[in-house]
Image 1 (tube, rainbow, N blue to C red):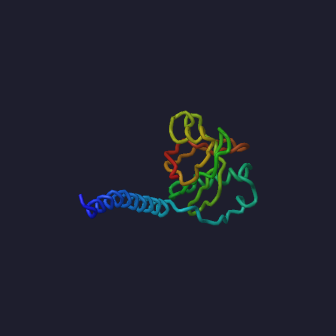
Image 2: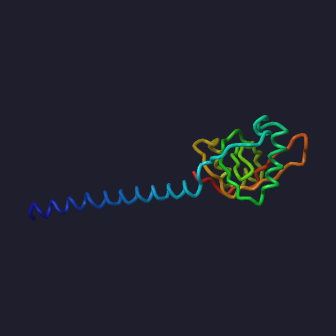
Image 3: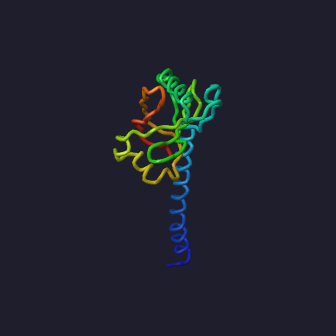
Length: 159
């Protein structure tokens, strides 16, 4: 075997994996770009005085948020995981044409045991999770002294 053939074989052995790595990087960047276009970071400014004056754990804040969520349920709304607070609660950033705020959400007991995303989120105490949530559904308490928002469904997080 001559030196030229050995050189071509070595070149081919090195070039094919490099080309595959290059293609994987391009594919990865394309997927990331698609998700950023499809699920942009929340970018809005709150104009609701109640959300500015009260904290998310107050009766006034939650009463207003529940009222707006019910009023705007037909609007396209984005939900982002704000953070894991404890095994019973998470925070979610909520955004639509009428709402731009963070909510403290109580996790429904059935959701904790369904083996899905919330189950895993609680197992890792929310570490390394942030991003848009899909398939979000809420229920609201009727207690005027302690209005609560219950998370009853969440499909997944785009992380």
